Length: 479
Image (cartoon, rainbow, N blue to C red; front, side, top):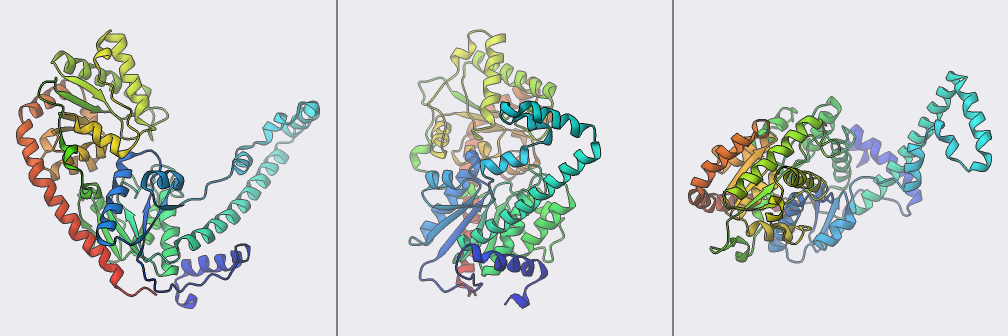
């Protein structure tokens, strides 16, 4: 079989063969027919993004409804988190360095003085001597970098060998939605390379691959495009969750441009009827605001303090306007790591500019899980959301939503639901614009809710058909 493989697969197979002695028995590329279906769910999840976790929950739910006895295994950023959240076996999709190796990577020759103080004077003298010979110092740095690269290469090969064993026996690997086709976080060697290497492993093992309702974000480098094109080309099924993602995937130049557009997988999550409740007629109506850390210095891919502060002030002013209008307001996150700092800054501005108003904000039990998020949003009457899945869950719950779009994917999502007029580009998100668009939405509340009741079932039907196609791959012979 190895002789028939393309060059990348041959190289990977050779690396695994060289390393296999460290892990035990010889690795074979033939998979055996298994009495139970073994389905893998792959996602860059485990980063406290509840929108992405809803996608994983929806796929698990749909696998169980069709294959109650299936063995489901996940491949994620954070397997420990996945096991706890979803109750399934999970493995890592990337190598995580040990603390000691991280220390080696971050160590600098100039930092030798951090060694024990007993020999501090000698180290200081040595360091000063090195500085007098720049070429020698540069050479030592190059040697250190070379050793780190060699160690990293060996560690990566070891990780690939373990991943090969973890994936072995999996009949179908579902790349589960979200905006995973991107290089804006970590560059080409993060998301794109991760897909590339796992597509090679799946090819070697005969595991079917399906990119299902996948989304794109920024893809900048040529290397990223090569990795993603190679991975997508090896898949037996490909679909994108919105038109802009479909166009971006087409631009990669796949051999067969058969990428279809199917709604986000989160629409396939079945909610208990009780989750579509409202705040109640006897209480003030509740507006839920889902902000993002737009241009925050630590939480955004670009940093601009002036833009961030302007955004925070606008959100605080909008909350103040809503409270004056008789609404109760609740800020809520969907990204549990990135959103809370923005929420705290907005409330701080409220305290400073409108003393006493922050005390009128609703504070429910903290949102820590997808169930918490859905329960909190079910008690809202209107939603103003910047996060993609903050918008989408509003659709699921039939809640009128004003979408503040920081990426075309959100505008596409709202257009699909007939709500382009309730979308505001984040670049145009002034207080006046927010008030104007919210006032329009407010006047159309019943019509919008009715529209969601009609359109969400169409999304579910499209997704059910897609699941039928994807699971149909299991009926094909795996070798």
